[in-house]
Amino acid sequence: MYSSKITGLGYYVPDNVVTNNDLTQWMETSDEWIQERTGIKERRWIDPKTEDTTAVMGAKAARIAIERAGLTKDDIDFIVFATLSPDMYFPGGGVQIQDMLDMPTIGALDVRNQCSGFIYSLSVADQFIKTGMYKNILVIGAENHSGGLERSTRGRGVTVIFGDGAGAAVLSRSEEEGKGILSSHLHSEGKHAEELALIGPSTNRWVPEIIEANDPEDTSYFPHMNGQFVFKHAVVRFSEAIVEGLQANGLEKDDIDMLIPHQANLRIAQFIQKKFQLPNEKVYNNIMRYGNTTAASIIIALTEAWEEGKIKDNDLVVLAAFGSGFTWGSVVIRW
Ligand code: UT7
Image 1 (tube, rainbow, N blue to C red):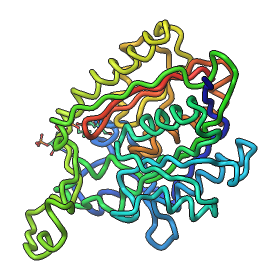
Image 2 (cartoon, rainbow, N blue to C red; image 1 turned 180 degrees about the horizontal axis):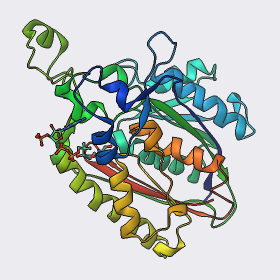
Image 3 (tube, protein in one colour; image 1 turned 180 degrees about the vertical axis):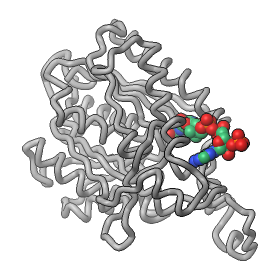
């Protein structure tokens, strides 16, 4: 059986920086509250005057990843695309990327696993490569949150957290033993689906119903989060997923060279860091600058850490995520 390794990384975030103070033009909030509770200082939100959309940002990140892999678009065999904020209800964004990159008629699969989207996508791509079905797979996470957030005091508990952006990795076939993706573990617990969800528009609650009702109290078309409930589950599930990944490979927490947690809240990442007694240089966070970019967060952070020289050959890199669904999981990589 083959193994798969990451051969190219890229990310793209919109130029438009929205600071915590900028948010006060729409809602009652403060830089102090946001930084204290989440660690976020600023985020990128798409300027609607630009061409950026979820798929456009994904394509921009993908071009960089393909080039850094030393490949061309024609070398890519398959696309796995993770997002909770696609440009269209259907079809998914993977096919848009196939078109935007002018790729041949390769397959494109969309993954709907929110904050765990990139972990799930990497795992799916890994299986295709291990079995020998494909050689090079483009794995992308991209989100345009800003287009769907409620910019008012009512929505502040969610709105201040989320940012836009995209990241991409090329996963390639490798025959180097003990290198590349060592394991992936995926979980879900659907009974908590509505604790972090956007309920409508959907086939249960379709647009005409929402529009006809014209109910100012109806917030079903904005994301809803039971913040403290999600937080409590996140710290437990993050830890479980990391332990599970380490144990499956006969590794200990001290073997970790770099932990990249999904950037949900700096307090969650710090809790995990403390629990696993990891020094600062072994955990990469960038939520301060980008907020929570959901399916894009891990791949943007991984790319930045790699660009900054913080991930070296043979390092043990652990990726872990938890989010809406609930879904969570980990991927362990020997770089
Ligand atoms: O990525 C997917 C997974 N997501 C997560 O893991 C997120 C997990 N949850 C969290 O990160 C935190 O729960 C939040 C950052 C979302 C919220 O922090 P919190 O400490 O749990 O605050 P809270 O929701 O309990 O709200 C505390 C107070 C409330 O006021 P009262 O009722 O105590 O008077 C809120 O109305 O803070 C108020 N509040 C705000 N105040 C200023 C909520 N949002 C804001 C805001 N600015 N943006």
